[in-house]
Image 1 (spheres, rainbow, N blue to C red):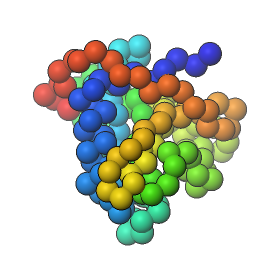
Image 2: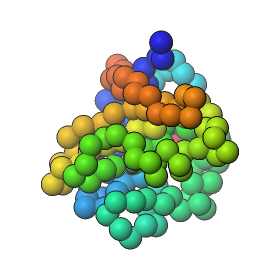
Image 3: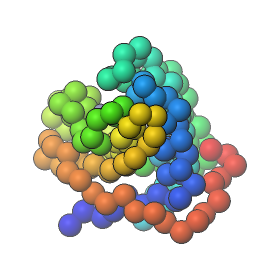
Image 4: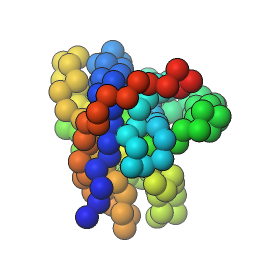
Length: 152
Ligand SMILES: [Zn+2]
């Protein structure tokens, strides 16, 4: 049985707010925190270079900067996040292709969270974990309030 992805209320709220603000485009970002089972306690928005509404492409330099900043703050990437404007929070074939590298998870141990944004409102967020070359749903559970680290 897969464990849930635990996220603080603040980090989840920051993710939902960013997803809504990006509408009608897709938002992308990272949930980060101390190693599991501690909850992910911060959300880092990342720039989406893709102009279209139904795709995202994280700026590589921004991605690397975010990962280095997390390492300095002794935090780990816990989930890659993006939004689906006016579409269910279910991974697309493109999402799966982008998450795999030679059939294996491109970032082992990092989950994926997809947010549905309906007409500008974030209405659903679901967590997904790669196993055997496919996405499997895992619970996205709220953790008790932990103040977001000022370093992230
Ligand atoms: Zn997607």
